[in-house]
Length: 313
Image 1 (cartoon, rainbow, N blue to C red):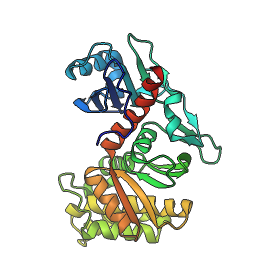
Image 2 (tube, one colour; image 1 turned 60 degrees about the vertical axis):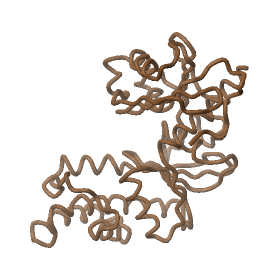
Image 3 (tube, rainbow, N blue to C red; image 1 turned 120 degrees about the vertical axis):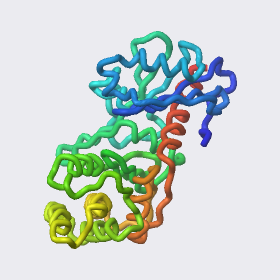
Image 4 (cartoon, one colour; image 1 turned 90 degrees about the horizontal axis):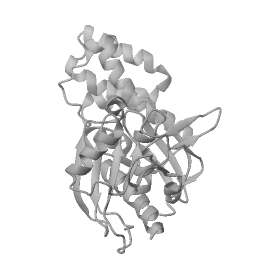
């Protein structure tokens, strides 16, 4: 999807936008009038660049995009973390989504390379941070948006937005817990990684309903997953789906507790994980608006870039 806000037509050059994660790189060459002209992606995320360096990776992808060597570049994500290329300090809540670009920092490198900031919830009782998701929020919502947004992932986010401001959010380590539990706990014997996780299957639905009904019993429910297979009540092929249901259910239960009864929300997601969350949320009677996560990142980057380089001309 092409961004709604486009750089002014008198901009001298195209620009590049980059979503730089912990383990992935996604970059796009954007024309002066907002068209996606090329894309380049790879596995050179932040962890890779800690050894190889960030500038060589960016230079390689810029060349693949067919862009000028010193094309303006705007980056979001973990390249701006403390251990990244250059730390882009967090903006505190409440933060206006349409002012993210004002917190972008310049990288000490040839050309005009900038990194967008993350968002921090600096509350002693509920400290939280995000880096990258704020750009997806900018891309997925319109000015003045009010509502609740869920962004599933390794660290899932639930964000309350009021009149275009991020006012509060919560992070759940759901995706990371699934990975750790399924690989490094006793449940590694109960998970068949080759089996797809069916959003409409009985194991997922039962795991979801179990966690929603008794979220504080999650650790007991996890052990029962293993016991049910040992006693012949369930097959190993059902393990991944049931584990997903249990963890996602516990996340949703806490989000409902924190944010109160909800009728609708926006879901920024893609692929199999997006389908799991969509099934879980609609199954609770919620009106869900789903936005593709990658498109949201690109749109948000383009919106911010438009404001940065429009101001320059």
